[in-house]
Image (cartoon, rainbow, N blue to C red; front, side, top):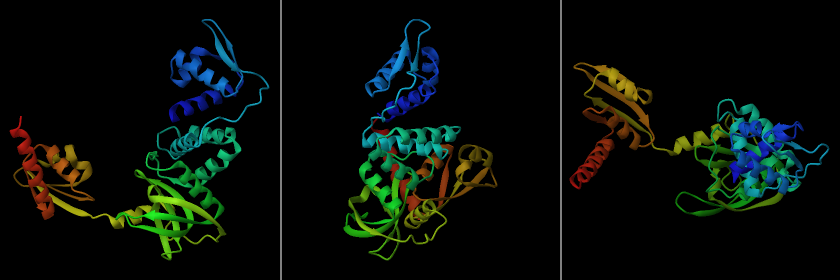
Length: 320
């Protein structure tokens, strides 16, 4: 639905110039078929936009002159999805789309009903995007916009937070910003319960409730909210220093996996690689991708993992 709504907004943006658009040109601009274009035109008409049509081979469409534009009819989830997608585009998630995304985002806000406009505008202003769009499947859009409204209003919040170990605690916080990072949404806030800055995964927040109490913003102990979240995540993740010797020349190793590790040439056409990893699956995949014999130097746990994978692959080969 988000793709259809975004395309409908793009169509509305083109028609708002009030110029006459040949159907073929309009379909080409939107990268859709003539049949899909007709459905989108009908959708605009159903929403109350008066679109005149000229039939025939050279036919086309034009928004009626002097027409008063009604609010765009989308539900809360669609409005949040559009805002998130366009926000990501405005932050440079796709080359060349930053400026168009900013213009489209501004137009989306102006044609939304007043209630949605306030919530979406708060989400737009209070979100620090790191580029790529973050999935919304695990996040309640209503919670997301509630948090954004509290950030903008500088209003204390109470909610229940479920930690990684499934322990639920009641928190009262001073919300600062929302951050979309990796595949997660985070709320950066000063935790009045723990007396310190914290980042909370939004998918673990339930029962958010504004308290009505305003607060004076505190200084965040980081250059920005995204950096604060990154630093916090990094301190929680285990880090492995991986070293291995590969029975292959350095040029071959460098061409296949050099972008992920430091490659050092050794005598007798052997190569040493060194890298840092947060988990051990992809170093194993990288070593396998070289297609040569190798020996793990460290860490010891990676040797165990190689044995585990080797046994699994051997069993798979036996059952062919």
